[in-house]
Length: 433
Ligand code: EPZ
Image (cartoon, rainbow, N blue to C red; front, side):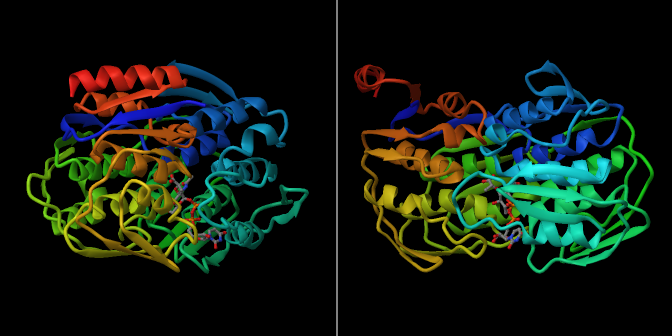
């Protein structure tokens, strides 16, 4: 299996260009089949999750034409069946967006239950609650979600929890339902807004996305559109914390600073200098890092997808920090790995107590999931010596060209496929450092 091998200790200096938002792209790609006309989508991140979803869509007859690495033309007019391939779909959680899209357009969908990162139980009861409220019959049998409706009628739906996936899925199912739908206690993440904006560019009537009340007026059909996906808030945040952890000076380009406000404010509390520009932020960590307290919350709170990256950085900061993970129940799996590198972190329930001021020494570690994997790479970049990160396929699900973007900022990191390549890297990087 491929690995990243990293010789740490070099501050990241330079700039990095942020790609399209994975979690917006997955909803938008699924929604693109809701018209029989051709849709062109730009700024699609070239990561495993989007590739797997596109492959699954092709499997049900969706026509694709890749214009370039980040631009795809999609036509859903001759979808032959609504039964998605299990082999493909078990790899990504966002498969469930095809339920909302197919149900919304064809009044029928058969999609395997989602797979994805093991960061928690990941129920879909709120998705099912929304589809049923719109008039669909939904059963889960043998690991497959079966949904069908004679017709879909607008409804007033109150979400029991703030959920990104269910908010997006119900929005898709409702855009061509008869009458008005209101989603209360809706998720407000930037990627929810991006999917709503995309659907509106196809002729949907969605108002209030980005607030906790989304109102939808059903339309009879959707039409072609050209759309560019927003920059990835979490990819940007990951590089912001990488700059902090390595005492670097990094300009993160092609971002929407407003989407990064909770991350920026925590880094400032941690004694970093963060400058905001129109479409860039600069993170300078010349001074020693300080401890802080973090609680993950739905947007605009501190994102759960940034929790591991913050945790490994706080282990280097002077003082004792706490992180409370309020969204998922199993998102501290990186702690065991980073403790082996020298971190002093104790997890009690959904809170991590981080005694800072430590140093990392390189070790052989394993990525337990997507964001924890990225966080472990940050620890490796800050460590003395060489770190080998295994199971990097998790990281490649959500980060495009992760190693080459870091190398461009001075990091000594390479993707290796064998022990021999690791040995060669160790020799070569020793000479350079
Ligand atoms: C999306 O997952 C993201 N994935 C996750 O990013 C992100 O961590 C999460 O939103 C929160 O921001 C994609 O967009 C593909 P939720 P999702 O539904 O939609 C509970 C990454 O790193 N819940 O907002 O699955 C759930 O258990 C990934 O890119 C229900 O109880 O998350 C959780 O506690 C990891 N019932 C909370 O809501 C439901 O029906 C938030 O989950 C649905 C969710």
